[in-house]
Image: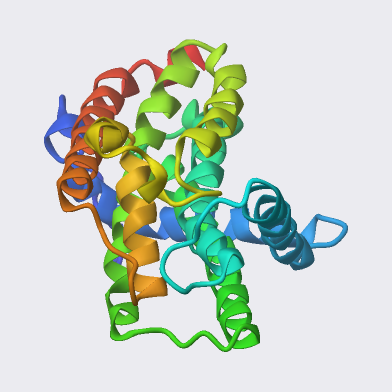
Length: 277
């Protein structure tokens, strides 16, 4: 055995006892899977990165016309309606893309899962991280949109990375839960797109959460994306944009609950993935 060879010890129950340490040991696999997903997404498509630009712009235009011009729903403060909508689309599209990608990530990597051991958590995590590339592209469009409307960001803009982290944790927790359920029950592959589509309308993407009657605001905040979207708007719009703090704290608590339940359920069902897939 060479001097630089790594000794691999087969130990009963090792995968359970050293799981989180193994995630760090297999970090290179995480990098490889993430980079593979990025290159596949943008290299093997007809319009490539242009789609990451066209999709949010078209969605923003449609929602602005329908809800801002036709329905004449109010904006937040003095922010243009288009910027208000786009500020919500940033976390929503990241969340929706993460759920769609992570829920099918294990099935899409079935050959890898059935052949070698590694912490399966790496696969959905790498898929969600990959969607950060689309998020960055969409964020650049937001800056261009703010420049077009001559809308200057407030000092709150500096807090935005904290809300990006919350959006990531929300996507990760819910994504792990749906990933595990999709492996066990393939019907969830059909249900997830419906959840994403339904969630767009029950989340304050096309409208401000301030239009929700006060007596229902706390109940409405059981949707964890409400707190995330309100946080993004508070940081991006500044000015008169306010956070409903009781609802925000409730949404963050729901995010934490999804994180705990998602990880526990994923770890509980992970042992059977190779057999079921």
